[in-house]
Amino acid sequence: MKIAIMGFGVVGSGVGEVVTKNREMLIKKCGEPIEIAHILDLRDFPDSEFKCFTKDFNDILNDPEVGIVVETMGGTKPAYEFSKQLLLAGKSVITSNKELVAAHGTELMQIARERNLNYLFEASVGGGIPIIRPMFSCLTAGEATDVFGILNGTTNYILTQMFQKGESFENALRAAQQKGYAEADPTADVEGHDTCRKIAILSALAFGNEVKTDRIPTEGITKISAADVAYAEKLGYSIKLIGHATKAEDGGVYAAVFPAFVPKTNPLAGINDVFNGIIVKGDDLGDVMFYGRGAGKLPTANAVVADVVDAIKHQGVNIIIKWNEYKEENQSDGKLQKYPYYVRFEGGRVSGLEGCTVVVFNDEEYRDEFAVLTNALTGDELEAFIKAAEEKGCKAVSKLRLIGE
Ligand code: HSE
Image 1: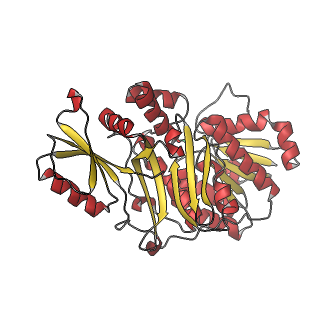
Image 2: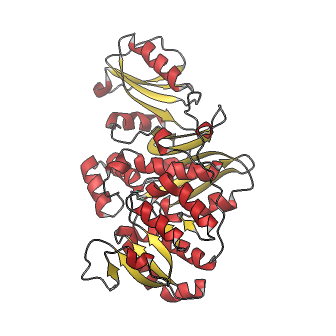
């Protein structure tokens, strides 16, 4: 099988490495050698062992011998147009590009389905963790109720380095970039957009319908302070960036991204560094958990190459992935969704707050402040709670959701 790679960055070059290193083993697994015929990238790689670089997409599109194309370019432009043209030309496409899958996956899967091709994206969520296939295959017999995930290796690495090892945000981010974990623009990691795309993909797989990322409330990790971490520790929690998708009270699916207090008794609390963890809750199933390296060259490249092998084994056969097109009523805005909250107040301690547990430190450093853990509240109820507290003379400086055990 001749394949092509579009985008020779961290993941694309990892794919080249894995295909070369594991050549003999891969022949046994798919019954034929995998030959890399073209590598598309605008940069030059004079020292690379590969001699098939091109800057012209048409070299891939018009090569009738190329049946599978790996898209590891990232972003939607030009990855969307390229992927669409390739599928329309009869080539299967394998991607690690979560932004593209979240934005245009519905259409690209539809084109693949109509042509008995495959558009596969195991590497788009959780790096090397097998999560996409279990979601559309092994877990299909029952109804999912919730998906909770630590889905971004960079932010989990940063949180671990900062709050367990005392590193600064800047140094931790730089190290994550050097290790090849971060996006080209790491804002996508630290502001939660990468997690947003991944929970959109998991939500579509778990509940069967596309959700729109611009309707997923998304908050990153930049506002978390050392004081929040101190309160979390005191109370037996870790702080993690969580993607959550759940069946909402109003019948739709509610997906959101937020830094959360996670009790140490929840296995997600113990997931550190670049590792990701995903818990899927089902009605018959109870809890299932997936764990592994969520970013990095070779773990992610392994997931891509496994998809290539699957596409070779399924030539002429579309692997059915239940993923219906977006309908507004299928996505909830979460108005009725309740979470307990941690809220930290500065400007003095007040009394008479109802529906919460009050937490104080005796240290001098925290003398003029306190925090509360509230009962489960909707967003509107939380705002009313904070307003009532602030009328007593304090000021809310941070609020984070709590997730359960
Ligand atoms: N920047 C992403 C992360 C890469 O840190 O998880 C893997 O999708």
